[in-house]
Image 1 (cartoon, one colour):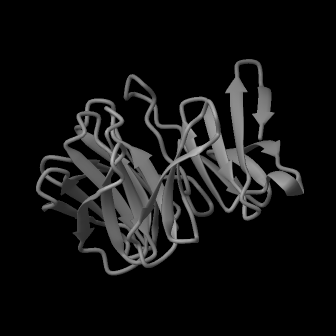
Image 2: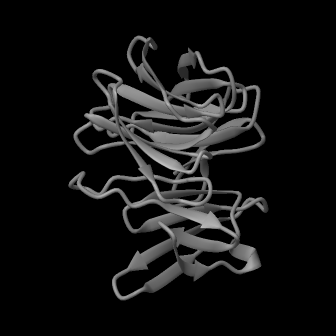
Length: 229
């Protein structure tokens, strides 16, 4: 497991023992988002310090520092082939980066407020972004062209994800203490489960809390919810 913290560190953990494997230091601000590469050999992190950083998971070494955003980086993700990273920022842009050279490949502009979440499509040909401007946007990763602007949310979009076949785009978020999909409220969160950040992968929702606790919420068919801490 990888985690990013307000203490400016990225940490790797052993899921069997619960022990810390690596503490990755280099950011000079809170770490808002982290993700593994598809092969598990690298981690990417995005921070309040306006940088995106790449790390070696075995040695803990810093591999690349990607600079270009002019404000905090809220969300990061690897492409399916691990050759690119996408980042979303409070500076209202989405950026694509080459993981080998660290070069900026594309700067995607169109949102009118902070970009809170980004994700690649399963084939790596598209990126989706969710923003405080209440829209979800689709982009072409090769040309940087804006493909679609999806409207319907009445508040910030904090999490976006493609379905495994790339045809569906569910958007889950926490709003007024509810877990919401689209405009439908489907799970009220008690005080102890109200997050400061969340991530969605398929039917799994990960909630991070200011107390330092992480909750995993698995959504199954038939509106069944299983929560573990």
